[in-house]
Length: 379
Image (cartoon, rainbow, N blue to C red; front, side, top):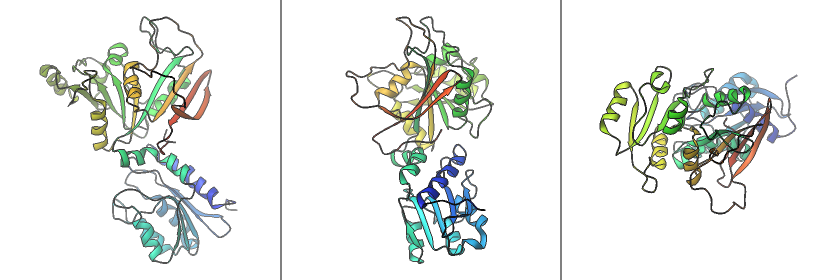
């Protein structure tokens, strides 16, 4: 017997669950899920947008339902498209299927959509409703919506720390604070984002690879904030350019010969404006450039001063914090988030917790930024 539901909201929640299967595969497109049900809310067909350039969720769900879709209801997380892109318009498939109703989570705010698909369906006599489980759909596609509205990637901040908040000892040792289970989650995150960003200090101290192991659905660009372009050509980042690209953002004052050496080694160098207050690379300029490249998710891995710079700029959309049951101590041991910090203790939560998990003794805490109307189930 086909799976059935007790409400349209429950059907849409199932469509959201299906849509998550596309995260990391479909960006910069949105993650979309679709379910076709009969009058008793029994599933006739379902699908999700599985990869960028591939069939859309509605097309897959209708194909699975076949002739049974005539007179049925389609629940889809995002407004069906009505333009010719890499795939035919989904509205054509909806009209051809003979559906009676289309229930939509959110209208697509993209300039080429913006309600046009819904208008076409209504003009054809199909009953259309929007706003079904809208909060869930908005959370799911927060990075996509953020890219459209703010034209910059959704910023994920990640750090591992001991119980006392230290991310390294006073001597600079940081491997390993978190355990293997925590590091596996980090690698999963790396495999689902468009870029991973660190500061020059982290590269000098840790010589990281910043690749996903095992590989995920995406190969992230590795970004280094390096005001003076001092990145060593012997670093693991430069030596593994065949595995993933490296983009170095430096200031206009960086020595020209250092910039040319890195370019000759295969590193892409971006000469960015200097932030007057800090004398370092302007973060807003970097984020705007990544937005122009349609990067949807950016993972900021540190160090402390880079995380602090993003926090000071109110630029963290989502945090992934791994807490180890260890005490490091030491007055000079760095904390997770540096920068200027707050002058007063915030009266409200900076991030809203959405997930807390034990990982073989470590604790994984994930929170999203509140108050913007955009939150994420993206990773």
